[in-house]
Image (tube, rainbow, N blue to C red; front, side, top):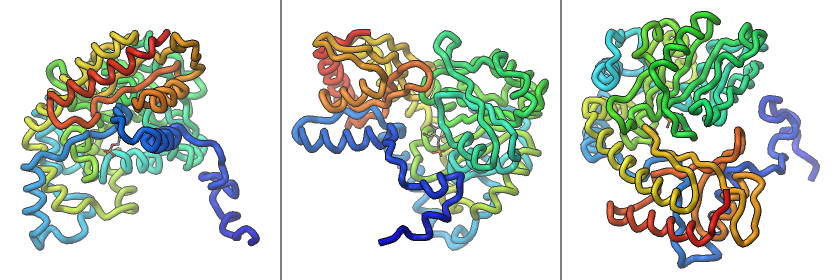
Length: 411
Ligand SMILES: Cc1ncc(COP(=O)(O)O)c(C=O)c1O
């Protein structure tokens, strides 16, 4: 059969007439395939999955109950447009209670979103003209960068390096790129490095943005998962609201990944432009979900319990990984451990990249991880592996320690 004319109509931004013909297999697909094959080859051995990037638990019962009640109310049935005021009010109060950010105008400075991902996808459409630049940290969550390119913009990678505590070096950006830069994307606690920002870094970011007329987009998807005292918001720094916004997700803070709920908070001008774009994309999240979200925001003890669980698991994981030769350090937030990938194993096997290590661990030891080869070679171990209870957590981690120990890894 001759090729359908449809193949010739694909837009260049998704590959033009080559769309769907790329034979390169991307890392997440590789991991998925390796997992399926390994499960088939060893149906009776437990696969230890440290590769997952989302919570292993349900939303808390009080939140699911709130949804049950709200979804049966006729007044919640319709289009939600740019969201209900109750959620905006609750978000402003939450910012003050959890992050100490005072004075958010809940009418003009907050908007809900159907998760952080669509918010990150929409923001470039409000700011990026062809030729404009978005500064994005790498490795990282790629959505804002992808959409910047789709609008004819260019992304400049800011490498996150261990020697700089995985914070970007803003002084290293060229003058020419700075002139064209409109957006700066940062994310702390960071996926995948698990690094946290400091007040000093956020202050520097505010100054940088003011000096270079850049908008800061702080992706705070993991911000509430903090292990050492109060979590940190970019907006808690003086002047931050003049230069940027912050995106808070319910996915990780409240185990509500599939519910699709987030809020964007900060500079009123930016929020207004985001609202304009959003209004042209969707009609808002189901009001019942937003109301259950209000319940969650009013019960921050939920996040405290979730954080305590990850802290407990991460501490055990650090010990287990280090006993196998890794150099894992306890992060201050998130649920990730980002560790240098081994170069080989005693039996003689050598690894060129973290991707090779990941593939080896899944096929030989049924341990799933995510490799990162963008800046150095690292493996990401996530504390969201499935375990029934604390005893089961200890069993899973002991099993990981045993399997990794058998390899005699070399670094
Ligand atoms: C850094 C980062 N930002 C955003 C998201 C997406 O969050 P949401 O579920 O709110 O769309 C993720 C999800 O893994 C993430 O890791």
